Amino acid sequence: MRKIIIAAFIALLFAACGSDGNSSDPILPTPSTEQKVSEVTTDDIVEYFNLDKQLNVYQALEKAKASLGNKTVNGKLVSVIAVNELNKDEEKGTFTLRVIGNSVDKAFTKDVEYTGFAQKPNDYEMVSRAVASWKADVNYLKDFDFDTLYRLKDNSKFTAAYLQQFVDLSSSSVEGNKHYTFTPEDWANTTISDVRYIGGSHLGRIAFTITYKGRKGNTGNGVTNGSPSVEFNKNLYYRTKVSVNTEEVSKLYMRGVYEHADVFHTSLLKFDSEKFVPYLKSKRRDDGTNAVTLSIQFVAKDGHDTELANFDVELVGFKPLSALDNDLTIGTSTELRDFFAKRYKTKADGDYSAAVSRLNTKLWLNKVEMYVTRDNEQIDLQANEVQSEYGGGNVTVWVPTSNLAKYFDIYLLEPRIEVTSAKKTGNYLDITYKLVYVNDVAVDGKVRTLRVHLVGA
Image (cartoon, rainbow, N blue to C red; front, side):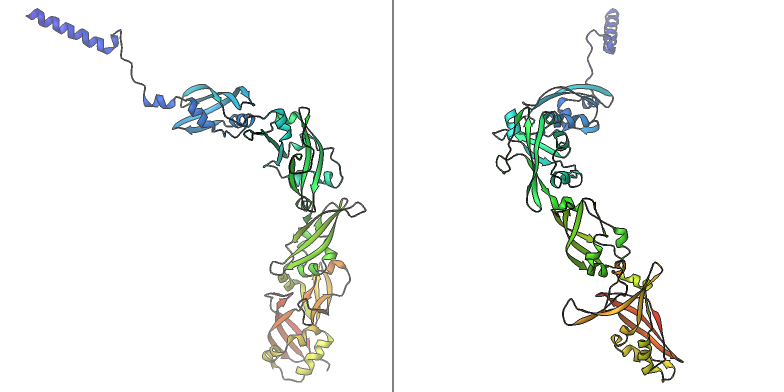
């Protein structure tokens, strides 16, 4: 019996030793969840690049090559460090990428085949069904040299290499199921000829004929079977050739510039005077915003005034009317002294604020001397009667006595003042006032004093 117990114990001991890994048939551990997550699949790569099937092969390859770095895909952190093109077939819309990267701490290399991208039409379709559009990321109104084409009638610079900077070409199959954008390789096989402007006074098209791999495309100007073209607004284009001289505008009052826009408009606009002439067609002003809008006819300086475009230019940033507080001076005159001497010379000293305030200022304001100080110069003004633009008779406007055009911006229509006090002391009447209205605009002027010597009369 004792021998049996010892034998059983030895058998159990050997069994225990075998379970510690010394068995010739070990049990393999189940891979952890973390190990499964770090494995990058073909589907992960497809999701990583997320390529639009409407792209052609070239566009898809360029996007894939630019999409490096870290992304979280299907719950996995994937880092792509290199993308290599193994093969491509543009006619079939297929290509294969070799993608190199890592996920967590595990490196991977995947060869992924892509299908179903935009297929390239045949050579006949490429040239006969080509259409053009402006590139989305270029400012063609500023950078495209339309002036050379239109004003100078010179299209020699408009080669395929030049147009490629501004224009996208695309084509499609006759069945309409293949939409394809020209690649740099396609542009290299393309020549451009007969670049021309087609259109009316403002909106037209820039058209051109293409030849692709020796096959010439459509040459007409019509919408159907016409050569490729892009829309072009020449008014907007030539508007970019003119800018506002904001520094000069800021030195001038708006109303006088408006009244004498034919004198000021060329000096307040910046343009190439060797090439262009801007003629003033009409004008309008906005008293509320202190702005003037000029309607310009832009012509070539070619001896014939060949019209190029028509557009508006807004002038803003004029000197505000509040600046009159510092620029404008109202002084006495012989007529003004006589006016008040008749009324107050013999009166006792005292406060006559109420009486002077009741006087219609139009009875005496036109009798004052008025001038504007600018650049240490005194610009004398005179009161003139002009026809009201609203009808109903004449109005008073103060303008420079000088005929120098540089002062013509000073135009003070129907200035109004508010008398705040009037006191007589000896032979003097001191009237305090402030400017409250001029050029159809209310202003909040500073309080000033006009001293009238009560002599004469």
